[in-house]
Length: 423
Image (cartoon, rainbow, N blue to C red; front, top):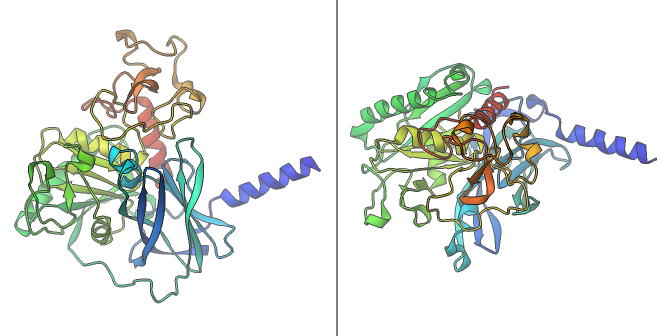
């Protein structure tokens, strides 16, 4: 009986996690669910705002259920029975980062967020789960959505001209990046085109994107702002821009983000997309990247190329920061007693699940920061904002220092994501 029970469990697990047929459940449009994510350091809640149909689906039609288990959150879409998983993704959010700031201990706040999935043919159940510091998930939101509900907004996005900088073919088997501008006035749209072309070249200047260029489409949406530039609250500079980006996120002068997710998604919805890059018309150093949400970078700083590649690593592949000696806004971000979910850092609790197989027999664990090991995969102390207790796989890497290039572990993580998204 025990053997039969185990077989039934394994069979049920396989059925529930196997990739599903797109045409059985979806049409090639996007269901966008918007909500407010609220709380403080002690807890969180989600409040539904709206559901919206967008005209394109830019994601894969084959890789519908997530295989990576990345992200501080995950959302799952089930069929009308509520039992069969038909779509899932992990993601991160600014709210989760903010929860680790000192402000969250004394103040409650809300952040606007969205999740997107293919537009369903029939009623579906959407669940959102939150990961705690012990790596356990708990459900924090659930809603049933009937695609025939007349309250689902079906008006198209505010239309802007758009064009492709890189055209490799069918969006369903490519990674589609949309460049959303911020702080470019109507008169500066020619500058936007030149900047966007330059940033597309930046991407394909770096391995592994250089070798996988044929797997990407790059779009630009010409959405002008009323004023040029971006907000610099610490310098008392405020600009009226279309995506409302700002430096000084969480009181970090170099942290450039946007909390106007609604406007950003409305603009991105003009084209099929997988990943959003907000290009900010500024010379100030900085950027930001949130897994499966967005990457932001200033256009004209001397280090913009390397900031962009670093931040896109966060957004696209869920890569962690490997530096540990720079000031950050978050506190006690990782629990060292569990293995971080990011592919490129480890607490050495379960190195086998990370890159142990890539470490040569001649490399000691942990690995001393000596010249003979600088070009080898190892276990180097210092990562994830901590000089000890967390480890990185390479002496230097794009996720640690600018101009470092990606290490073999990060390259593998990026290639794995490209393969998943273009299957």
